[in-house]
Amino acid sequence: MPASFFTRVDTGAGQAVFRYADASPGQVGSDLNVITETTNTNSSPRNRAIQFQGELYAVGEDGVYKKDDPTLLTGAWSIVETFTARSTTSTARRSGIFVVYINDAPNLACFHGTTTSAATWRGHTFDGTTWTETAELTGPTITHFSDMIVYRNVIQFFGLTAGSTIAGSYDPGLGTFSAISVGFPSNHLSYTMAVFNDRLLCFGPTAATSSQVFEFAGGVWSAVTGTFSGTQLSTGNVVSKWACFTDGTSYFVLTKGPTTHGWKCYQYATVLGTPTDISTTVLPLSLLSSTDGGSFGGSMVTARSYVTFDQDTAPGTGDIFLSFVANGTAGSAFSMYKWNGTGSVITLQDTGGDVAHAIPSGQIQGGERIWTVGELDISITGKAGVLGGEEISFKAYGDSGTSDKIVSFRYGTDGEATISTATLTGAVTGGSATRSGNTVISVNADDGVTTYTCIWDAAADGFSSGDRVQLKPVISV
Image (cartoon, rainbow, N blue to C red; front, top):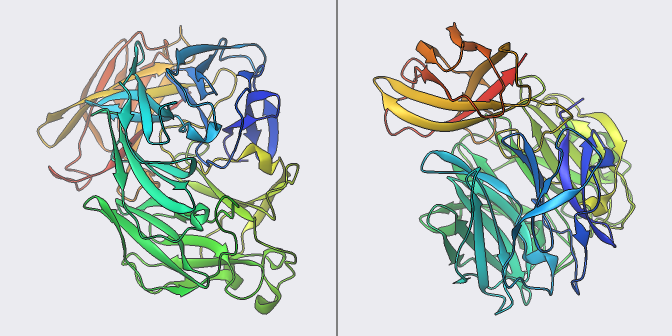
């Protein structure tokens, strides 16, 4: 069973947070608020609730909410940051909530559209103590979001205005918005982003019968592979979501077949080029078209696929789960499968849930989508360069009183698969904690009271000054 994840849902009468265990949802607490806007949408795949410093936060219609008691599945939510001059035409002008690092310190970040125009925005950050809202800023003109991701501590996003694809970014550290020109066609809602080998990539249609991979570099999106056959039938606001992900070695995309219904899976090597069709090797017959020997039937105009990446249940493994649903009709269940590598068919994990819950493509690091009663939480709070590596500062949450927790760190350069154990060296400071090999032992998860430090021997792990690498803390008993 993968670790649980969250989705923030428009229920029709209010906005609520659901916790998914496999494909089985359960509401967390009461509704956040009552919906009063004229148009509501769950099309953003990053419309999430996340854990931050032992608390649970979610973006609502009118602001950011926090669960009053994060140790209970019942109870109320309270608004902790109110959106100024918020747009009331559509909940689509709310970003998902993310963890970013500003001056090496973790912050929550999100943004909302204002009433002035479809091009005016306000950003929000929270450093664990104080919420900060930017002045009204001009950015991209967007009425609906389609995808978001954090890349190098900037929130990158795609959206739509008048049938045209728009790209943009919000930099929480600088407090700025930027509009990014793209040449994508109007059937934009299939475009999806992922990080691969520290490169921000997206995949989607270039025309009615072709697809392509694009890369964001130098402030623009540019094609990095030749087109290949792959059709997307929906246009405009009709959602047909594709998914892309990485296993640390290759980059994969899930899309529909070029001429018949049914799913396709393509693999790109480390050096992006012509993809390999591995559909019949990794997908079950129920997802394949008749052309590929499968039994999938019906239209795929609004079919969706989602990816969740679980590296918390068993640190060092990094399990990938793929979810599929045949359409966008409220009440339609999705099927969750476990990825078993490029040589085996994915296996069914569970079936259930509701496509209207807008399952998040949860590929964000740091445990943000994981939450259970009394679960431990850990945050890196700072870093400082030392000879051959970095001194890492961290705080732990969730079980104050007993110094019996174990902390380790995982690293990776790929974008998601931070599964290699980091080499620790030297002394540990904070409480009664000490180092035992590559772990910090006797840690008290005292809800952030104690700041612990340890030294990562980055040189021993093959890194030198200037290298980009992700580092993820892991805490257990």
